[in-house]
Structures are given as C-alpha cells and as structure tokens.
Image (cartoon, rainbow, N blue to C red; front, side, top):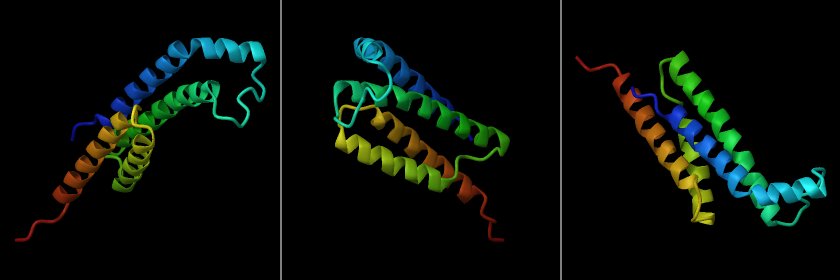
Length: 128
C-alpha cells in the first residue's frame, strides 16, 4: 500500500497557505491596518476570500497529518467513509468554484477510495 494521501494533502495545504499569504499579501496588509477583530464582517469580500483561502491550507495540513498517522500507525489506508465524504465535499466545492484547488483534493480523495477498496478486497478470506 502506497501511503501518499497524507503527504499529498500536506503538500496541497502548504501550497494553499503559501499562495494565500503571498498572493493575498496586500489584503493581509489592509486587514492589519483595519485591525484584526471582526475585520472580515459578514459581506463576502476579497478580504474574506483571502482569509478562508489561507485558513484552509493549515486545515489540509492537519488532515494530511492525520491521514499519514492513520496509514503509518495502523498500516491501513484512511477509512473508506472518510475518503467518500472528502470526495463529496471536494466535488461540491469544485463545482461551485471551478477555478479552485479542490480538484486536487478530489484527486487525493479518489485515490483514498481506490486504496481503501483494494485493501478491503484483499482482506476478504479466499474461498477454498
């Protein structure tokens, strides 16, 4: 079993965070000038978009680390239900925003599904 789901999610998270910080630097400067407390408000603005974009990166890293731990600690793939839920969330997000990194997360989720199904099939007792 190749243990790539966790590391791939960590890489996506690092890239996401880096892009959010560097690409959104002018927005972060503006947020700093306006004060951080309740700066984003309720309106969807460029500030809100950059905040959530940047915040999602560490969440990918955290989830990637959890996947990596599961794969290493138990020598098993991420559970199938987690892979399916991640694929559903990623697909919905990617459809709602076509120019997004959720397509990458969806590819990782599909890989998780394939690996989980392969392992579950190989764990079935063979008929003799």
